[in-house]
Each structure stands twice: as C-alpha cells, then as structure tokens.
Length: 478
Image (cartoon, rainbow, N blue to C red; front, side):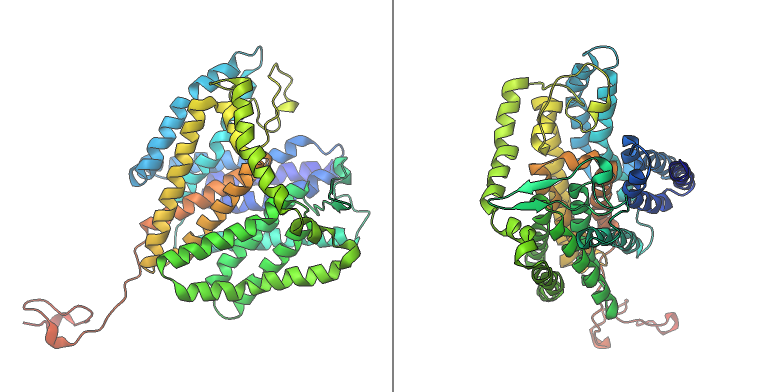
C-alpha cells in the first residue's frame, strides 16, 4: 500500500504543478507515464485504474492552459481554419452517436463520457501543443526529456530478455497474470514487455524513442549527435524484442516519410545526414540478430518471414472490418463509447463489439456521419502539417527539421493504428500524439531564418540603405 499511496501522492503533486504551470505539467505527465506500469505491477491486485494515471494531470494541464492562454481556441481556429472547421463539424456529426449510447439503459451515460474522453483527448492535446512552445529550444527540451526518461525504462526489455532480476515483479507480464506469446510457422515468439505492462505498449515507446531520437540526432552537433543516435539504437533493440510487427514497421514508415519530405523540399544534405545516422539503428539490428543466434532469434525470423501476413492484416482490419461493421451496426453505428478500450470494467448495458482496428472502432462508435467527420479532421491535419513542414524546410526555418520529423512520426502512427487502435487505451499515447501534432502546427508562427546576402554600397537606392548593410544612423546614405 505504501507504493500505491506514494504513486497517488505523485499524481497529486503533478496535478498541482500542471495547474500552476501547465507547460511544466507536461514533463510530469511523461514521467508518470514511464513509471505507472512498473508501479502497478508492484501493487497488490495490479489495479486497472492506474492505466489512467496521466488523465487527471492532463485535465489539469488543459484547464490551466485554457485560463492562462488568451484566445486558446480562437487563435488556433483562426490560424488553422480548415482543421478548426473540421473539428466543429465532427462534434455536430457525433451527436447521433452520443444519443445512441445514452439510451442503452441506466448508467449507459458512462459509455458516452468514456467515449467522448477517448475521442477528444488527442484533439485537446493538439490545441495545447499549438500553444506549448515558448522559446527556441522548447520543442527540443520536450523531446529530449521524453527520450531520456523512456530510454531508461526500455532497459527493462533487455533485463527481461537476459533473465536478469528475474524475480522482480516490475519486469515482464507475470504480475499482470499473462504470458503473451505468438505462434509462427514452426516456431514460437515470446512477447517481451520489460517494465511496461504489455509488448504493445513497450513496442510503441521503443518505436517512439527511436524516431524522436533520430530527430534529435539530425538537429544536434558534435558528440551530442552520437548520444542521441545511441539512444535510437537502444530503442531499436527493444523494438525488435517486443514481438509486435505493427510497432516494428513504424520505423521504416517514419524513415520513408522523412526522406520524402527532405526530397520534396530539396534538402539533399539532410538526406545524406539522415542516412548516416540511420547506420546506428541498422547496426543495432545486425548486432542483436547475431546476439540472439539461430536458436533464440525467433523475433528476427518473425519480422522477416511474415510480410504477407502484414498485408493481410491491413486488408482485414483496415477494409474488410469496415464492411462487416456497417452490415452489423448500420448507418449510425452502435454508439459513442461502445468499442472504447476499458468499457468491460463498466457494469452497464452495452452492445457486444469486436472492433480492434482504428477505422472499424471509429465506424462502430460514430457511425457513417461521425466517421466521415473524423476522416475530414485527419485529412485536414495531415494536409496542414505537411504544408507547414515543406514550407518551413524550403525557407530554412529554425524548427523545420523538428517539424519534418514529427510529421513523419505521426504518419508512422497512423499506419500502425489502421491495424490496431487498442494502444490508444493508454491516455498518454493519445495525448502525446496530439501534442506532437500541435507542436508541428505551432512552427508556422516562427519566422523563417533570413539569409543575409552582403551587397556593395553602390547598389543602394536613393534615400534608403542597401539591403544587407548595417549602417549607423549618423551615416545615412543620401
């Protein structure tokens, strides 16, 4: 009980911090997200509510940002009109879904509340992220803090694989009452989670640490660049051990999207730099493959011999499931919150749902109208962030490389969520994704780096100094 009370005290302190200084509250959210799973494993009964540990801190952060930021919604909507109008339309189109979930019986309003929270958290975080930057290095400090904290937690993956501290309940999934494995063609893959509660959650954090560390490496100089490359290498090692293809494939999608943006913006030198830094994660793959050996290297075999299964999963979860969902639940779906992860804890009347992928879950909860509204928001976000990023890259803006990396990271997540949206049961993952989108949109407010081109004095026009000349006021040209 001491561990539980200590954890609850930390949450209370974090809430107070978020209320007093909402930007600082984001650091507390990252830290709480890192320790919530090992703390849960150490508490008797592994209470499920600890998964929601970051939610009250996030609500405090949103409340504080709203009351301290003048024009919290107005400024965002005015500077991002397409996204703003799409969000308003989504709210309106989701009203029928909310009405349906309210009418299942006594207490079914809980479905509506949980569904509203789950669907809206990423968009609230996006607006907060838009207002988050305050200073040139704000984005870098946030990404760096996340990578260091969760990079440390990823060491638990190596500990579990090596069998170190085997009796410690904070490692592995035994404390959760599970022993996750996957069957391949003639072999079995152990799903390793380390300090996290599942291989999915650990794999997501490993992929995120890898992607964000690459961003930090490409924007660093000297030895710091190789420090972040090494963190990315650690993330790749943990990613390979997670046993979850949809998480592993986030990395190549991220690299392809990032390289394409560099190519579109004409940033050839950064493409070369990116390829050089990616050598570290690639070397990590080779090393860990040799380290595992032929007998233990089932993870390597699992990822390299099942590409056809991946395409099949995309078809089943991304397309076929939509047709079956529409056939079963009709035009307006089963109601908001009906397929939200965690509803099995609610003792209320509700429909039986099976949807796991992101698209099918949205369709069953929001119906066709809400799904079209949600799709419009996603398209507006991708188009808006892509446009901002390419413009920033072409103008050599100070945050252009961060923007490009975060857009590639968001695209990688979109691909993973198409196969399975269950990872969003963790509020931190949803709010972190939304925060990253907001950070990208915020870079449009930063002035581009002006390239000073010295020009000879003789080109000065009458009555004004030549461009690029800095002349004292007492030496005006006439």
